[in-house]
Structure formats: C-alpha cells, structure tokens
Image (cartoon, rainbow, N blue to C red):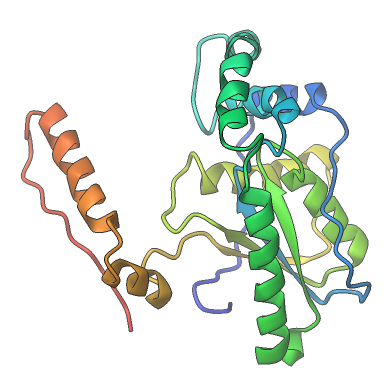
Length: 244
C-alpha cells in the first residue's frame, strides 16, 4: 500500500451545496466490522456508492445533485433537490429491474476484507489494519467513516480511492469531503493521513487489459469522439504508460 502514497494537506475548498446536502440527510450509518482489535492503520475506501434499496434512491440523488465538485448548476441549492425529486421514481424503477439496489457495498466489503487480511500478513509492523467504507452519496458516508476512524484511535489513515483514474468530480470530490469534515469542526486530524488518489498503471490493472478487457478500445473511441466535437482543432495522440 505504500507505493503510490503521498502525505497531503487537504485543500481549502468550500461547498455550500455539500453543506446543504449534509443538513438534509438522515443520520449517517457506518459499516460495522467484527474485528474488535484497535486498528493501527485504517484504510478509507472512497467511492460514490450506490443505493442499496429503492428507498435510498432519493437521498442518493439529492447528495449527488448538490455536489458542486461533480456538477455545477444554476441556483443549485434549489434546483438540485427539485431534479432529485423528479428523477427518483424513474431511477427507483431502474434499480427494481436489477434486483432492487446497487451491489457496490457488497463488493466493497468483500474487497476490504480481503485487503486487510493480506495487509496484516504482508505488513505486521502496521497491523492491525481495518478498512472503512466512505461513500459520497449514500451510507456509509465518508464523514461517518472518518468519525469512526477517529473514535477507533487509528494512528495512520490512508484515503484510498476506488477509481483507477483521477478526476476532480470523483476522487477530488471525496478528498474534499475529508477536508470539509475537519474544517467544519474546526479541528485537526489526530491521525496521520496519506492518499492513494490514482492507480491507472498498477500491474494488476494492466493484466486485466491484457486478458482482452475492452477498456483500451473504449478509451480510444472516447478520444475520437471528443476530437470530432472539437473539430480536430489540435494534433492529438492517445498514449499509455505502464509498469512492471
């Protein structure tokens, strides 16, 4: 986990809309793990999340449309809730068609369990490790996860994005949520934070591509369409970097 990490100071970016979303949401829930040992290292797994049930859809959409890191809308504090309310029934129906909810939490739990088991074996000096789920738009929320980490007495915290490529609207939004958590309370972290904010050339990811994953072709198609939209105004070339 050490590779690709860097200690950072969270940027001073504010979000009135995000604060509004916080004030409108129900009490946040955390993901409870059975291991009772005090963790030395906490890994915060950052992602947008997804509604587990159709009842979660409205709050998910509300937080999403109020996130100015993800999108900027005119009079967002009013338009965001309006759009969320109007779109909720349609999105709920779509989730019903795939079983009633998103599987992302289930898979994140399984990944987290496997990750900390491996880390405890590979790095006993930083053990015990504990994973925390920090979703942006649905429970368990990033803010609740940070509070749990602080309460657990974690010494070293790693903000680990689940997005391989960095974007200000995904990973950036999650990192801003960490900053805003401490800024809103007017306190400094008791944990030492480091960040894994991207991992697009990790060898395991490259192995997936080499097995026939369509990702390279789809990225190429995206680049082509973007350049068409720009009328090929500048020379361009799609290049890759890899490792290992």
